[in-house]
Image (cartoon, rainbow, N blue to C red; front, side):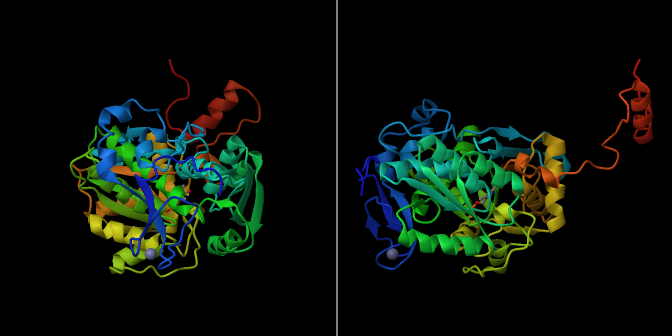
Length: 424
Ligand SMILES: *Cc1c(COP(=O)(O)O)cnc(C)c1O
Ligand SMILES: [Zn+2]
């Protein structure tokens, strides 16, 4: 094992989520005792002594402002400028859905266009600290691009595994960063099983497999930012898209830690899971009140969320239930409607995951689970520029001129608009 330059091992350790056994940091992800999954545990009392709203405000405008609550390298982290994305008040979308205090956490603005940069930033620095030379992942699309970009930045080899049917924009982006792309005929779950097997054979940093405890800590930073950006106030509701369930489970962990280190007094936030009908194992478990998640075979337009056997599914379901939240499974055709509504009301172009969230929010409001006066945050986690093939101009929204003449334009416009073309 390479020289360990991850900081503060006495304050930050690995803990088994099932039996609670503690161990020091190392590239491990399964408990030796019970085979349960490992996660990072912090000595929150110790960290409380040295973080405050002021020390955080003095930090960089990136995820690293929360480095005390992350597995962080001792020196300056390698980064692309991940995190501290805008939290924008969405008045137009709120009006359309019947909400007075709706906010969009616009994570489409991360360096590679998705929230996965948060996870990969943390995992990459960990991989460097432990002397890995290959950065890898099993991906539903966005993770591949993020791993490829971070590997380029860090000077590591990138080897990304994806299902063969992904959106071309996502594959293209990953290849542009210089990654070797391995396309597998099968579902994401097949790809992930292959990666778990390879993790035993090769000493690679497969970020969401053998570095998963460190990788998934990055997800917390979205919730940290939301609370800070609301003036150190947690929202009444947050709607989170769910694939493997890391972002959702870690949102709950983030809230818990914010209270534990004294940055906020309490977090009343109801956490809601958003999935699409074609792949909704976590939302189904929540709706049925079950603790176990039954795997499904995905058929969904929301490919980034198409994980039929989610690694953190039961932790996500548990977190939703403990918070008093709910799980939505929107119609497949509501996904594109949601993407379009967000784009047309707020000027934010999202990939299908965002459409799933907007459609889920609409359901939560219609079912009376969210009330008009409450503060709501929706997580828009992936950029629609990677999935533009899904967008088609609506009826009358595309005018074609056979010649570059004003008269041609006026004729075309008159065909779609009742008002006169010329002004003044
Ligand atoms: C991966 C992904 C998610 C879900 O992440 P999990 O932590 O696996 O649940 C949500 N949105 C987008 C755009 C993603 O790429
Ligand atoms: Zn254990």
